Amino acid sequence: MTEPVNTPGEAATTDALIQHRRKIADLKQRIKNRRIQVIGLYGTPIVFFAALATWASLKVFLWLHANTPSAIDNIVAFVLFVSVAAFVVQAVVEFNKDITVWKDRRTPVRELKLKLALAEERHVLEARRRTPPPMDRQATYKERLPGEIARLRKESRHYRRMHLFMQWLIFISSAAISAVTAWYDPPQPAKGVLICLGFLVTVITAAAGYFKPRERAFNLQVTADSIEQHATALELGISPYDTDDDKRNLAHFATTVEHLRADQRMREQQLDQPQQGQQQII
Image (tube, rainbow, N blue to C red; front, side, top):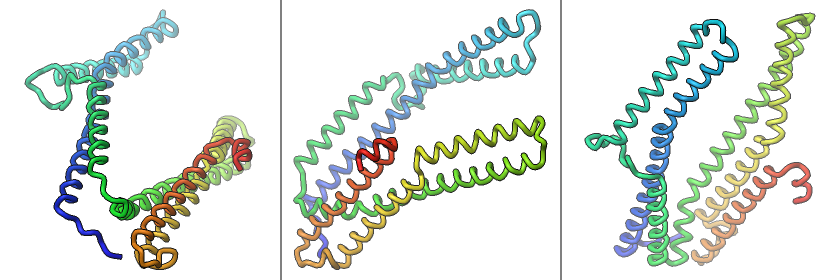
């Protein structure tokens, strides 16, 4: 397959679109950072008063006529000290004009969101004005697929490991229940251990049945393998991409991959449905 040649105009278009994407990514990160800053600045006073109210409630309801345990006093004092220190540091960084550690200090999050919306709108308008021909877009789509395949396989490994972890917990907990039952009569504390192990087995079994990590891992792996198979067939020029028309091959390839991704999303939605809802969908 012949590679498209980039003219100076196409290179300028690519650079302009890349700059827009960089600006959008930078604004998204600034919004995340600003949210953390605002939560820290206004959350530390809440933590301070919550710790104080908790200590006062414990004093009134539990130790009204006695001294509060020293451990409780030390923990509350530590939380109060840390919250006050954190608030002072954040307030100085936020309102001191000579300190520029925070890039968007004294900037509301809604203002950053407005800048992000305007940047995304500029990117859409610029992309529409500089839209390349369909064959170039399809070739670019093909070049982005290795990242999509890697993402699918990464998620597949994540769910597979989650499934294995849950299964091993069930195995160990079930074996431990039998072992503790055989070792003890069971009096206390063995009875408490049995209750905890039984609770753990029940929770893990219910979570595995609800989230279905094994099925998710299998579906993601199948989709990744199918996309890679079609990408390899297109690269090698074998069936079903063995025609001499590169434009037709790319269009067929993009259509097939989008069908595979749509099927994957449909399977994910079916896994998110309750069992009765899945039967109705099927």
